[in-house]
Length: 224
Image: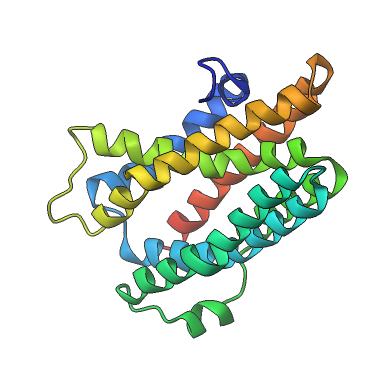
């Protein structure tokens, strides 16, 4: 299990204001209230499909950046989970919103999606496996935190909320375990690859990725 004050918590604390802008964004609040314009959510879903493709590439890069078979298998499992499971679930979910996979695959990639995903890939290419996961973690763990907060908030409307399934998916045990595993892996990488001299760069990477998450939410909201 990740430690109570593990690397993820330290990185999050280091950019607390940006983290709150991300996890408490108006897009997120409107999801919980069920008041988010459906056009905004559809645009988000399309860009999230394109985002997942690039995240699969990031895990492929993680295989290359790995020094051990254990790390390679961890990265390969992440890539397989996206390509073989998550993409299919996302397409199935989007069908309920009138979006076909062909439509999403043909859609232009929004600037916010491109900026975020290419930043993650660049950090992985320029740095090591720890740098790459510092860029991945705001998304992986952030979604779990956002959904768990919404699910526990008495102000969140679940009955009759068109976005209840999204909240339940990321608040569910399966995804919460994914987030916990990512936090544990960050601690493991820090123990093997890190040290006090790494914190400034890792903090900058994590904060930049968090701000790009803010931009991703705003991209969806602006499409309404």
